[in-house]
Image 1 (tube, helix red, strand yellow):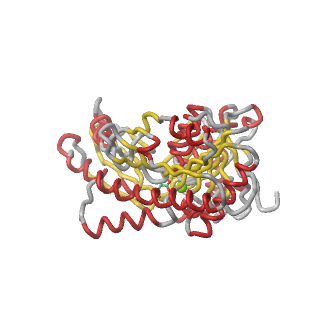
Image 2: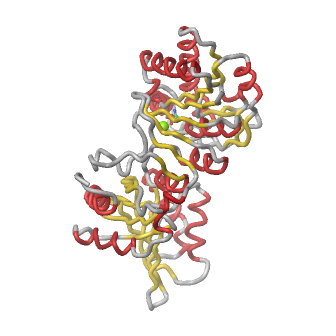
Image 3: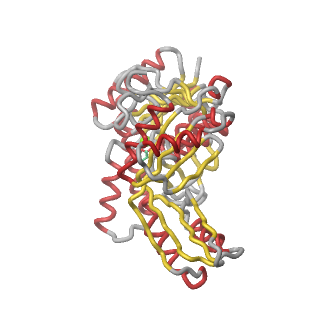
Length: 406
Ligand code: ASP
Ligand code: MG
């Protein structure tokens, strides 16, 4: 008998018919002799609807009350799925974050899970019930309701799978797996059967929005196999697992792009120790993740410093830098939101030279100018003008992974 955690996203529980369909799938999984814990997201669009409501009554909704508000979305879907299961003759019990006791820190809106109490879920399973857990929510040390950040139900699913030592965490969504590129841009992109945690981490952070990045970090740390599958068919999907030798033979597994970037340049910053720390320290403190950084040393003792941040944090980052203008000391600040990041990811890059050169060559043949470059052991990213993003993705995909006919 296996223990399976199944997580269903917003579109999978988007209306009563879909919820009944989920109940059918859960009941089938159980009929095969498995124990099942289900994690649900809010019904499609619900979290956005609630956040918009908050904005209608308050110009600056507080984080604590926003969490109380949005957590209600998952409360509704967990109860509805438990009801649908019961109606199908399957014993089921719903659990909210605080009832399981998914303990988190107090960072409202982006809380991190600290511990999970398995006992109530194990009790429910031992009693023959399916446990239906509201995703996305937890409780802090003072019994405040917290939420785990957008897409956080993925993390609830994987964290529960880790805590319960489940055999697999299946993430049911509206795509049938992880693709070599976004199929809307590259129609002949292929679905991957397997991908390593590290590659998935890079792809998740690059804006391939299949899984919340924290869920992949959790899966990697606790070695939870994660299957990304469609709730609209029975295909097996993509399994995210530890790397093996075969995976290293593949040079490039995926091409990702991210249009939600912004570029900030500080001109003529003094070239001396401590400067970068003075710029990036306060930005990090504000919880803003800086991605690419370029510093160019000039001969006259000053330098230009360019970096990218997610578009949503752009105004905040600019405000922080401006408020420290005296301390940092720069001649001018220029910004550019017309940028996109395009990246190739693959374990094979660890052991093969010349991948970057080939990537730059492919882009130059298309006449695409590279504005910035950053690399990791298994990833090369470039910033390009936004209008070239799709062309870049297509040409890189076709050269490294395969064109329409190959
Ligand atoms: N309902 C939350 C959101 O939309 C959490 C989730 O769906 O994973 O972000
Ligand atoms: Mg999601």
